[in-house]
Image 1 (tube, rainbow, N blue to C red):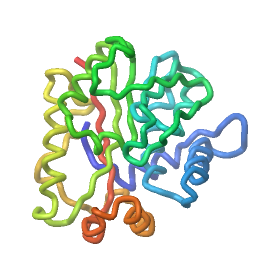
Image 2: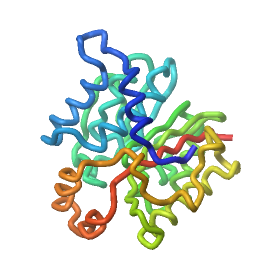
Image 3: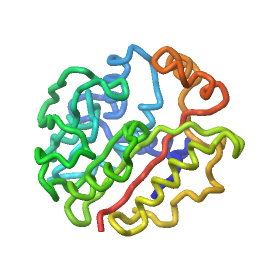
Length: 249
């Protein structure tokens, strides 16, 4: 699977969300409040990404799970209740992440970066790898996904939520098209096959649609302070999310 997350996708997760047994609040609401406290910002694209990721992860039990670049992960503490969980992060502030190690309940920190083929993590170590807002920062995609393949057990899965800017004209989407073509090559069956072959974006699909779930404009404006070089892009594009799900062959 390689597709843009839609409003329908997001809303359907909220409609069936589970409740945390320790409180009267839906678990996703608690996860979202944690993010709000960390960023001092009400609501965010990450709320959508957390919800979509959780919809595929909540049934996991007895698995060894690694979050790539998890930082102050919202989902790992929940997953660690029934799984063996690892936060794979150098904690060097890359992608505006944390610059110091963050200890999460029941989660083991691994101080390395996927893509470096580090001996810190042995081959075929994980049943599942996932990331949220990480892959758009990866420059050497071939090395990154080769390492994902090395780290996953056979028939292990990877689930990635990837930020992407989309405009409504082909001329404005050349960079997005190039990235999507690169992601699509990962699913060619050499190392990975798509979780749903019928939902793999084609070149002609690379354009913004009002059906897509997006970042609020006020949040987009706040990002101009963090990354001012993209201000012109944000003025004409929407910040959306790609969902990539693949199985190691």
